[in-house]
Length: 178
Image 1 (tube, rainbow, N blue to C red):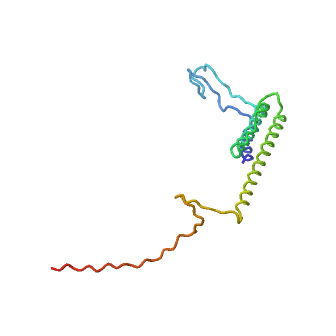
Image 2: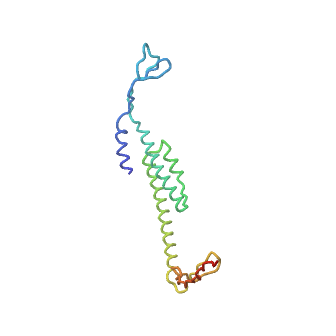
Image 3: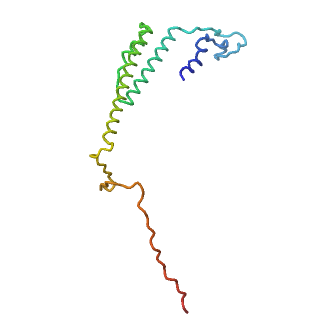
């Protein structure tokens, strides 16, 4: 997914940006058509080149965003809080190189991944221990508590059978005699 987004954004990043028309201010209104008479101000078409510093800073912001999302996942799923303020401060400082920033972000990613794998392993061990404890152990007794408060040691998985009751016949109704 990210690769497709980069492919779509690549032509826009590599081509210089330019405005498509000259702008003219005519009586306080900016238009893209020349004024009748003389224009007060005119903005000519310009060509800009991408700033390499801006590109590097946006790349650093992307690394920090990915790190922040990974930290939030660890916090949400396993209540693991890892401090990334050191990496954030280092990457937002213009004097540090991109290599130093990437190295710090990678170290924090490895720390978060290690904590996540440890938490997942512990959770799996707990599930395995619960399974083992509730497996067919003869000392284990399962009691199901009804809503009425009385324990029921066994409940059938199907409803009790219904036996047909004999049909009571009503005596026929006699017509009224006059």
